Length: 210
Image 1: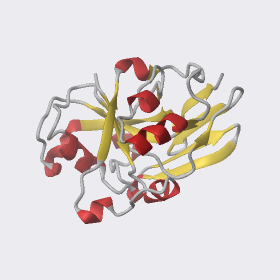
Image 2: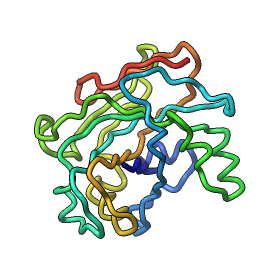
Image 3: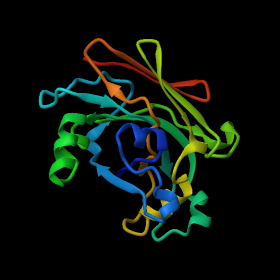
C-alpha cells in the first residue's frame, strides 16, 4: 500500500506558500511525493507532535482510494480506478521543509515521518456524494474554528489527471491512497488542539493533538 501525496494543487494554498499557481496551464506535471505505510494515523488516534520539529502544520485533503491495479492509465479511463473517498491530514514539519527547499533536498524528513498521514476511519462511496469527485466540499476545524474550506472544483489538477500522471511512473494497486492536495488556511498545531474534518457535512475526522 502506497500513500501518494500531491503538493500545490490549490492555487490559494500555493500562493500562501509563495509557489507557482499556473502549473496546469503551463503544461507542467503535478508535484507529488510518497509516504510509507508507517506514516498512517488511523481510527482518530491522537497525533503526538514529534520532538524534531518546532512547527508542525495540518493540511486537510480529500483522499481517493484506488480500487484496482493500473499503470500508464489514460486520463479518460482514470475514473475506473476509484469509487470512494475519505479525508486525511498531511502533517508537515514546516521548519524542516523550509530547510529542505532552501537546500534543494528531498522532503522525506518533513513529510514522511511516523503518523504524519491521518486517515479517516470511513470512506464514502462516491455515488452517495453525487458521483462527481470534482464537486465535493470539505472543511477542517481547529478547536471549533473553521480553518480550511476545500472545493474540489478548484483543484489545479483534477483527480483523473493526477491518477494519469502518477501512474506513468509507478503502478497503482488496490488500496493505494491518493492525498489530492490541500486548500489555503494551513497552520501550526499545538498540544491540546482538536481537529475535526467534514466531507459534504459528514464528520470523518475528529482527534486530538498531544
